Image 1 (cartoon, rainbow, N blue to C red):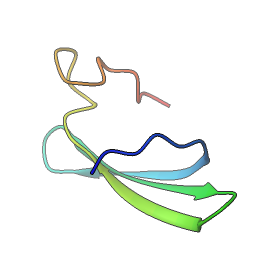
Image 2: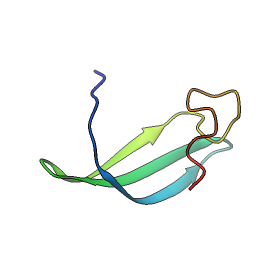
Image 3: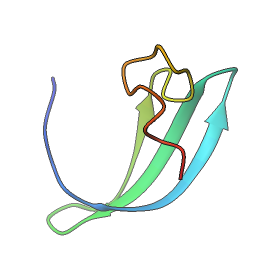
Length: 52
């Protein structure tokens, strides 16, 4: 299930070669951890936009 939400990124942890585990805080749910597939690759789904 895909869900669009807003939050503040607290921490990003590298996972494998190009993936990230993102920890952020949301107003309605508190602290949430999610998995971002290939955000560190230029040709990935996020296009390198996770370089914080």
